[in-house]
Length: 325
Image (cartoon, rainbow, N blue to C red; front, side):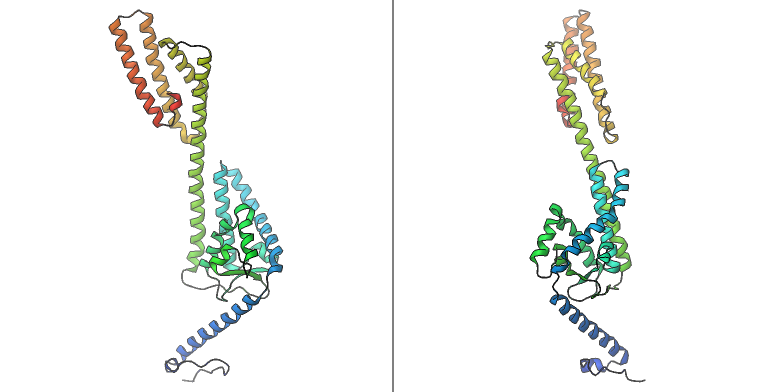
């Protein structure tokens, strides 16, 4: 077997490695050369001055959001709440930046303005670094990207927070070609990260929208109950059985005029059932008074009515509708 030719300029291998055969020597030599190349690349990147790239980075970000604008428009037409729209837009944005930078080191905006994301240590750009960089875009984007801008201004290598955490920089694309890591599971990670982000955005947005809809419904129902109470108080309705029946009947009519969101349809139906049963019991009590029922009969009717109203008051408070009790 022929010996593997050796580059005279390359550093000598340890004797133990030289005794392992030509294949092992080739692998070791390749590893050494790759490490040496990464060291040279890192030194070059650390020596660069990137202040002149700041404006191009801003313009690239604007272009990227213009690319995402049609997606946001479609989501706005398909979603029912700002919460859902915001989280889904964020999920799609993270997926776009992640996939583009993982595959080429460039988004559409960066490609247009000659920029590229690379590892500061000169190593290959792996998916974890890109994912870290872009997840922290959420923090860098606070207050209209003020956080990210401050980090870029204050750091030596013009890195935002995501770059610092991921060990990356944005630099000249022409001087630094994309070198992606070819580790095991890379393809699966390229799919997994966007799926997780989009699923979290979908379910999180749905949950927030449901909470918002419930709060809005409860506020509307409470307001209707308070308004009826204030109107009847202003009208001087007496605190008799007939007066209570008149107020409760008006309240039931006001609540029936509310159209609840689909998620709160069961709650609204329960509220209407409680008020309808109360009015039925009150009407029965009014009839007993009108017919001049005996004292024992009135005592039984009124006692049952009071117990029922107390139970309903506790139930309504548990539903968050104590103002309607």
